[in-house]
Length: 253
Image 1 (cartoon, rainbow, N blue to C red):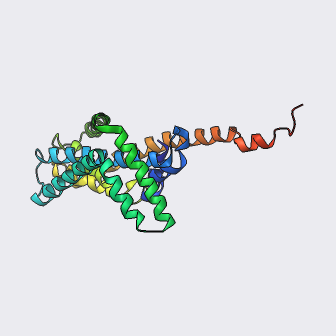
Image 2 (image 1 turned 135 degrees about the vertical axis):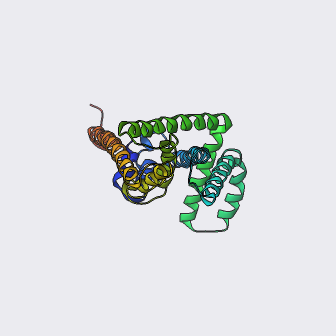
Image 3 (image 1 turned 90 degrees about the horizontal axis):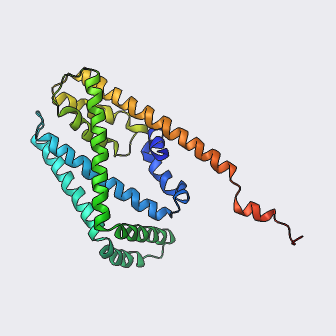
């Protein structure tokens, strides 16, 4: 939640970087393991949203053939990425090690170490674990879709039933691209585009996108910010082990 809140107030999705480096110790993991979970999470998000977007396009109107083609290509790429990461993690390690062995750059050596550990972690998750994660990801995005539907009904938005579902996919796919804090701008534009295609007016669709985004940003930022402050307070109460060692007496009494 803290990383999600940071993405809402900082540009270029800095919250994901914070999750890798700042909170690895809190979950008893190394940064490389957290990095592997972030990579897999993004692949699952793209896959779930691409499936949702392609599916809703079959029932929507006003979707050009070019947009459909791009969406289907994106879905194919995400599927290939998942398959490669899950089934090819072990196979990729050897070629990558050979590639990095050709350089003596210390920074690249660190990159090699991190990538190798990340691939190893994904390999350990296995096929069954990945399928379970796909199921959890699908359930989570369906729940978010229902929130978009609820907001549309709450304001009496006149559009096709598929509109809020397509809006969920399009808006969140736009948010995955590093941009302004909280994806302000691309998110609203994507919502307006999807709802306009579903039959709503441009002005009402723009207001709908703004309301959804304000609700998401306010909720996530408030909860994540509170968790961040609680975590900082907890860390401040803990005394580092090295400081405790320095205060120990030289000899036993």
